Length: 196
Ligand code: IMP
Ligand code: MG
Image (cartoon, rainbow, N blue to C red; front, side, top):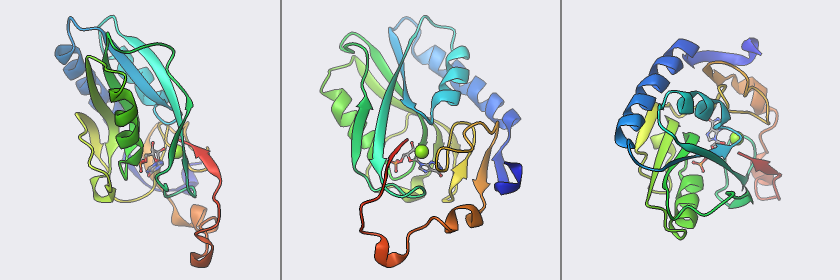
């Protein structure tokens, strides 16, 4: 897989260090509170498994699966819940854990849906933030790293469901996905539904 990577942006060591810092910060902020870490499948799985172990609190973990319609390197903004939470959140402090906030559409939509369920608080923790791509205003309360405006994979992030198991985050070579990019005149045909 390494030969498909143009450049490593965040090494396993960089990620370990940063996740430990984020865990310590979250631990301090949520001490004494009923915390629910809410991972967004599938991209946030590696991040939440490391992050949750860096937080020494009696927290709960649950997952939401969402889909977005679009080709594999850009998202179209239509979001749908594929797998919902197991229970109510009205007595919990909810911290959404995401792999990357790009256009902001996914988090924006989820915040609206979850706010209606009246959690005690609702905040966002993302490993990567790509603010240059934002089309929806989203406040990320905890950010691992600022990410350049490039398509990245690894540590949970995928291209066409591959590369999630890389232990680092790197820029995918354009040649890998260029062949799958739709021609400009095809861009309005129905794209496949894809899970985050
Ligand atoms: P948003 O709704 O545009 O903020 O997109 C968020 C989702 O798009 C993330 O949870 C990822 O699944 C996916 N995504 C956005 N940028 C990248 C990237 O550079 N690599 C892999 N997935 C990405
Ligand atoms: Mg994805």
